[in-house]
Image 1 (cartoon, helix red, strand yellow):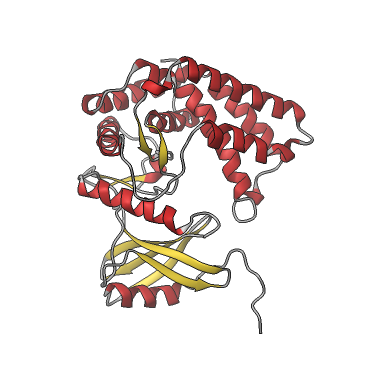
Image 2: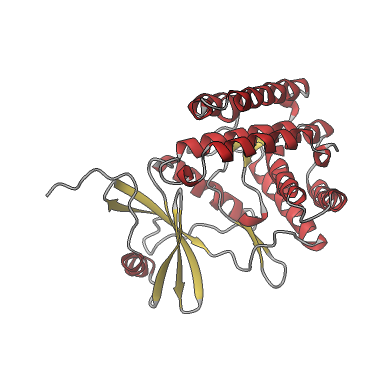
Length: 333
């Protein structure tokens, strides 16, 4: 019987555990689905050691894009940046392929990032985050990978998202006008800062505390490079600022405390890598681009990710949120 066309299957955790155990020489391997999202994340355990196995969707990440992510992580590990690196199997292969209902799905086994998330890092941790981000940028600045990754430019973060989400604003013309105005203002302001002088290379582009762990000795491990791509390295500083904007917005910290924490982070970064005044001034405008890129990401993955929330209420609130970000004193450095 012909299999009916499928767009997103979920691979059996128990079957994956057996497969990975055999391919990687793990003798007592258990496997459990951790997250079913844009990609699927499984946690594996073998005699007290934990691993992460990530199954990509071809609709989201093509094979060469995955190769680019693997290459980037291998270079970062080689240069002693604290990342959760990909692990080769017994034959040296990094990427595993599975014949799923929708076609080929690719998977990669990663080191487990020991420790846990700290949504509000302490001062010591903030200094470590700044230092490690600078170390990462010292490797990725002006780097050229062998395989393609997304480029974060005006087209990918402004023009394309505004085009593909326009239909969701059919009954929200005022919000769409606000969004377009914010995009235009960000683009002009960024041009006025002469971004050709900015540091450029591969950025994480999702550099929030949810994507790094601290262990009990405050050793940091950075993970989830799914959004890694070419762009201004100040983007990663911007994303960390976004985290504190969230904290202030939801009244988890005061504006004054957020400013102080960001100063600790920036000072640590600057000790290991320069950051210019124009790059810091670009943060509000890069943030607008980041949020609008997010709208495009939600649209691209509507069927399998954002269909539970991407409606009029969310859209109104998010547009207002972006406007508040653009006007926030948090980013008036």
